[in-house]
Image 1 (spheres, rainbow, N blue to C red):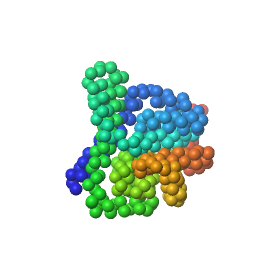
Image 2 (tube, rainbow, N blue to C red; image 1 turned 90 degrees about the vertical axis):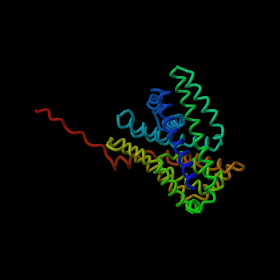
Image 3 (cartoon, helix red, strand yellow; image 1 turned 30 degrees about the vertical axis):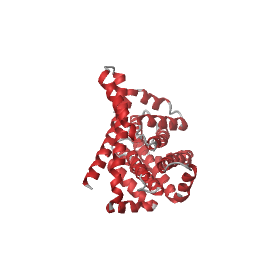
Amino acid sequence: MTEVVLVLIAGLVLFLYAVNNLSETIKNVLGENAKKWILRFTSNTFSAIITGTVVTTLLDSSSAVIIITIVFVNSGFLTFRQAMGIVLGANIGTTVSSQIIAMDIGKYSPVLLLAGFVMLLISKSGKVNNTGKVLLYFGVLFFGLFTMEKAVEPLRNSPAFTNVLLYTQTPLGGAAIGALATLIIQSSSATVGMAIILTKKGMLTIGGAIAVMLGAELGTCSDTLLATIRGSRQALKTGLFHLSFNLLSIILGLIFFKPFAALVTYISHGSSPQRVVANAHMLFNIGGVFFFVFSLPLFELVLNRLLPDKPMQAVDTGK
């Protein structure tokens, strides 16, 4: 059992290490372009949503994009309204990673590892080196998933692990586990990835995995809220919007859990269990965005009343 836990932790560390470094490396590859895209293509809500989706897909981290957005809001480059659109787009962009995880390409990770290593070894070009790093980190990410997949197989016969999974038989219990796991490891992608792996191995039901995914959406708000500490009122409102949007989406997801799970299963007819979970993640996030996008003025009004801008202090001219 100790060996299983150690291997599982090793796979998780590799995954988180790759996600963090991949985000930073791609930001270096894009240079100032990511910032320019965010600033240029946020003139209206829908363009802001598209921008948030694209940049999150490229950086493979919704938290990174939302934190960057909060920094821009705090600096006055973006308005609160523009930031809300980017946050919605980031929620859509993060579902791409779950689709990739469901492709079961972990066994091909050595190819990416070798290609990235060779590019780093033989090239002296900065751009080629950064591209090599991207390939290398993708390889590490997929190898981490592959390692976790192999590590969980013996857990099927573990009574302790089985007892934990029993909590996922209810939507609320599964959501609580997903939120707690994401709060601890600070990565909703890792939590959803683990749910997909367990579903693939037949250790977690599709309903249980969907419940865990719902909880992960709440747990991912913690780091973005931390980014608002000592920030402006506009930045704080951006973090609170992210929390309130995810919380309301999760509440609706739990209320309509059975119809939603049935709809996903119907749409994914003939697909593998892990693909059904990935489709549920994408459908839930896209559905939440379309459901709430027309309510953004209401969100803005409520948060502006709760957190009005601080009045400007009059300057004493001495006259």
